[in-house]
Image (cartoon, rainbow, N blue to C red; front, side):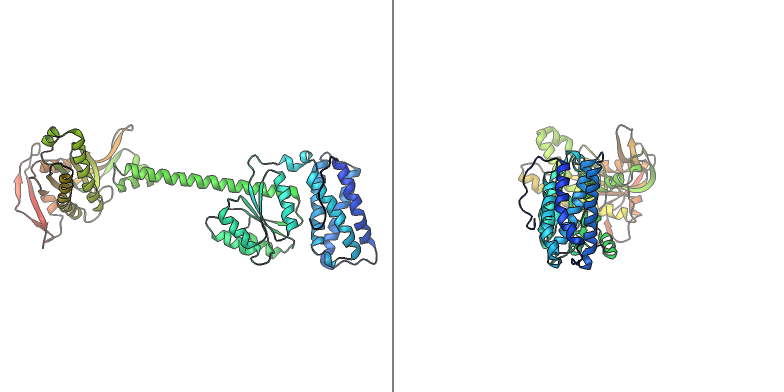
Length: 486
């Protein structure tokens, strides 16, 4: 440390260290008293503070306190800090001070390096979970002092000699707290702070600014820029440890909150992807964003109901092995589900080989009937691709039929508190089911109620026919959908 020599291990007690510091400080204090010694004005405060700290060590030695080790350690840190500041400008000092200062620095350094800290607050404040501290300072003496102080408390200390090196380390190393010197060549501490706070990955890392200048405007500017704290040199080692402890705790809380947030996002993605296989995205979103959507019951809505099934599926299932039946169903459902979702329909459920879907619940749009018919036409066209895949797999071709009806239903959660589903209940559902039983293979039949909701001249419809359905008193007028008007 700036020519102070090698620290030697010793078994001396704190009282002996105090005596040695006083003896080393005596020549310097005597030199200060000489009339011929002049001190540059910027150093007056440092010299006075150094004198005061030495005086307090003398008082502590003559009247030991209950926390002797703790108090002595604080004073040693103060003496060293002010002595180091004087040493940084040693060329401006009087020759008498130059010759006396290194001896004091050597004694203080030895004391701090080997003092039994078991009696001090520093050991008492060791963290259960030490952190990784980045010390950024262009003065090697300062970096060494910080490293020694914090390493004894169990922290891992990495250092950088410039703002540029600090930013490089922050990109590759996980850091809990940054001790950042304000005045450095090149990129200064204020610029490093600015870059950190603009980087989302570094923004939450606590930054403690360190400076030898007590400039209130500068302190305020750093705090406003995002610094968590500001320490003036020379800093008290116990105070430094307290600020570090506080910074680490803030960082740990942030990391826990971030982990919790990421876990919630993963859980939500899992819920969406998992339940999205059973419900439409709209229903999943409604349940996640509006918890009241889980309540039993529903509300009255006008919807267009779609019912579709595979013609002759019972016979197919009877003559095919179960794995092939499942393969047929999955291929068919995969194509049809994508089409229904792309037309903003909601799949109520799969009933064996049938699909029950609605347009208008849980979210209603003005063109629900039109989208339902367009969806049915697209589903019919998709059967060609389905059967090509079946043929390639050695499976039989399929035919299906689709029925549409528009009417009022109660849409909501149906079932019990233990098991429920989102669905629709009402006479319009029964009508759609009856129409589906009268639909021919590869035919799309819509009710007159649906036809009345469609834009004029948009779809080409076949001749209407009247059907009588079991359980329904009035006859039902239906229309086959040929396609879009050319």
